[in-house]
Image (cartoon, rainbow, N blue to C red):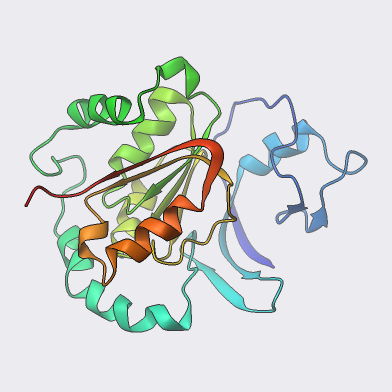
Length: 226
């Protein structure tokens, strides 16, 4: 259910329909008879700002401020703790400054080395940036490598990142890496830097994220040095 959209710049083209099952904006199943790549280009020029997502089980999740809030009941307590730590950190983060003392050029090189891929092999691939923080690297993934990015974070810092984002290929989602709101084996890559160590159960986070990767995809997880 969509209650408010905004038009955003989009000049790209698609050679096939992007979604495989259901078009949320058109509110119809995806078939060759009712959707074309041109429809997808039109869809990408419309940002859903307010609305509601309904799961197969009937559970409802709001879209507020342009961000789907895919939070389970079990996440509520951890969200409150997060608001006192990571959310507070990103509240005082000045957009564009260094993360961990690293500028974006360094983080981009680190990202490529971590995945072990050449930039030309990343074009059009789907990646989940799990625990995206400031969102700077998520935006760089789309800008430099033409990737489709699901930028997932529980902290409210994604609201600042969303307003700075200029790419329709970056999708900010509020959710937990312990319960990533993704189908199993849907992402070509999962990238998770400096996040699992802060979870109640890093092992559970590792297991949950690894299920999101395609059978021949790659998952990179980095933790702080002791």
